[in-house]
Length: 234
Image (tube, rainbow, N blue to C red; front, side, top):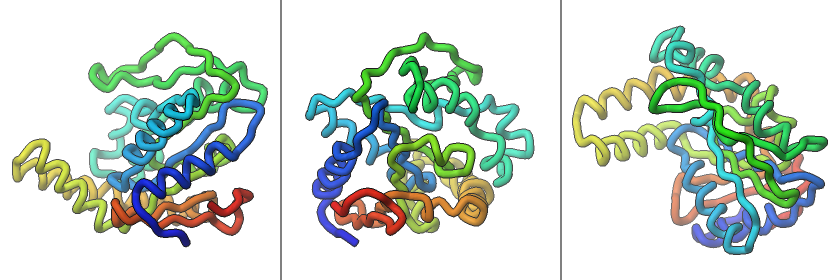
């Protein structure tokens, strides 16, 4: 297991990404629980790769949600609803992962959902260069329906209890209300953490990850390449 500064982590992961060769755009999954730091990590990697003149496609699972009526049909605090009903995985494969994969035409859409309108979205397709890198962050990315669609799998690990603290702190900073903080606490305790526990029990995501980033200490992270990975050690 490697330990270093935040900058060393980003440099190390960038080296791994640039070392992976494919005949199509490289599809990188950045998975992990809510509030684990997935989006921040993906954004940091995107900055460095773009500085190296690599074409980067940034996308997130939040742009592949079903409308609220469907994703909350089992109830707003249902863990099963979070795991089974929230994300349009078929569309994710159809418009993004498969076009960028082997035999794909590289014509992709980075979203199928308009959060403001709570309706499906149909943006025009964009064509990716062959050497593009897709950095895709989100939850439940290493479940069986998606596992073979990724060329590199990164899992950002943080203890569940710490994700609650981070979400609470972030929500308080944004809204500053006790009621909002209580809603975050309820959502994490009743929906998000139990959904992650269901994910771990059924899909065992860390068993399928190439790299696990232990992100409990943001400025002093540790990371490891899993034994089942074909990636050379950083």
